[in-house]
Length: 193
Ligand SMILES: [Zn+2]
Image (tube, rainbow, N blue to C red; front, side, top):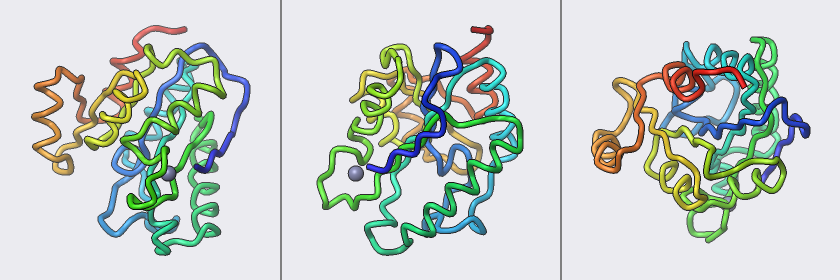
């Protein structure tokens, strides 16, 4: 597991887990391997600013198996994350931390979602009540990871990009569903701390 700690001291008492690809930025079946390929969704930076104003600390939780598949170098990956974090800072928001699983599925690690390893690692680092913490993701593996860690799963089903099967299973399981990240965070955190 790769843990990138931007801020050790929480800014408030609330946290939210966010998946990266498909939540903050457009996903690709060919992986996001460089800053050139990384495109924030229009509402994502506004959503992060909203969370900062609400003093909700953001922890990214992302599978990046392109690393151990040999499709992306660790240098390129670190460069990409530095650029993402810098762009978020310039926009007036911030990340508390980012956790990444570099492993391939066949490596059988405990961090690749739907395993809860990255969420539990965050809960050891910060004073976080997992049962009160939402995890906003766009894939079944995100919802499963949330359940496996005892968090509250939230589905982001962006128009035109989400899987209809994931949506129908989420609705059947009464998982909250939103079509933009901004809608999700405004609804999940309506009040100041
Ligand atoms: Zn892993």
